[in-house]
Length: 137
Ligand SMILES: Cc1cc2nc3c(=O)[nH]c(=O)nc-3n(C[C@H](O)[C@H](O)[C@H](O)COP(=O)(O)O)c2cc1C
Image (cartoon, rainbow, N blue to C red; front, top):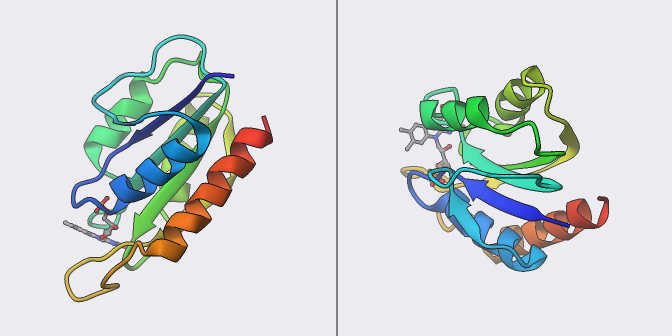
């Protein structure tokens, strides 16, 4: 089974989660600068919310994602809104790409908020999520 991990992280929070997820499934965490090529059984895709939405770069990555990606599982870090999942899943589904109902989300530090997040517990929960979505395939 081919599993890929991609993420966009402007201040490093989502990147920490991506590393734990990638380690858990035996993949490498790569930024969305690296396109996904060929048949991929599972893409684990992460991002954050900036100014009430997801970044244009992440939107562009989703727009170019090949439909040879069989399923995407989404993870995100945010400071205020609950999760970036609806933003990301909506764009993927509009492209006809299957999105897992399962998501991972945790708080990410932003200015004076959520200092130290993601923390060890968040990383452990991310590992559990990654194993769950990989085993569900
Ligand atoms: C410029 C900027 C705008 C942000 N706007 C929001 C927002 O509208 N809603 C929210 O929940 N979090 C917002 N955040 C917080 C980020 O979603 C949060 O810190 C996240 O963990 C950042 O992920 P990253 O470190 O991977 O970039 C914002 C952060 C930045 C830097």
